[in-house]
Image (tube, rainbow, N blue to C red):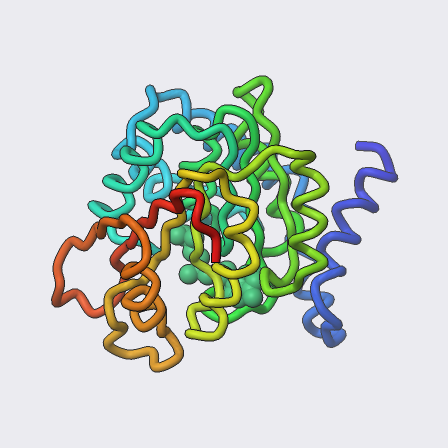
Length: 263
Ligand SMILES: C[S@@+](CC[C@H](N)C(=O)[O-])C[C@H]1O[C@@H](n2cnc3c(N)ncnc32)[C@H](O)[C@@H]1O
């Protein structure tokens, strides 16, 4: 492997925050082995993705995938039946452009990557609440989600979805295209989810859709307040809910149609 490539992997590993010497040494191991880990993880991903597309196939991929080092895991923060129902519904809409807020380990990004016909974008804040994002190295694995889909572009943003300059950057990259399906699954506070809705829905295609994760009142996390916002916002738009069990105490997905009426 060329020296410059090794340097790239090492700098990835060292670029996460300002770690102590002990942490830096701890990160040296996955940095040194990152090229091998990436290769093995890519083989594993390709093996699983070789199966025909289906929502259950994608769910099984997120569960069965066993990567290495920084690429170890693409598991979901979702309930299986809700994930599958949403993925099937989104696929039926034939969206060209999908954007999600809240990448985490990449389980929902995997689904959007296999559905969007032109562009898939995902935003996550390093250290953000409810997950904390991912190591920058993992972006290389996420990009593998579309390598066998020529013509499908992937954009990965590591930043705060509440930051209007980030939204402006995304708008510039979209270059006049609009988002057919927006998935909001980032900061789950009332202020955070309402900010995401206000900031990003002007980029949604009139008649396009916005989905929110965690519309069921959360049994344990007080700062998970999507249910409050969902109760208000659904009153003004055609909508439907995907909830496996009303008593589950978390998750649940609400989908809104934007009908050209932006906030
Ligand atoms: C529940 S996880 C997303 C789960 C993922 N969609 C899935 O289903 O597997 C929430 C993610 O949102 C991110 N997040 C929190 N606040 C954010 C913000 N203000 N901007 C962008 N991402 C944020 C967290 O870092 C975390 O990775």
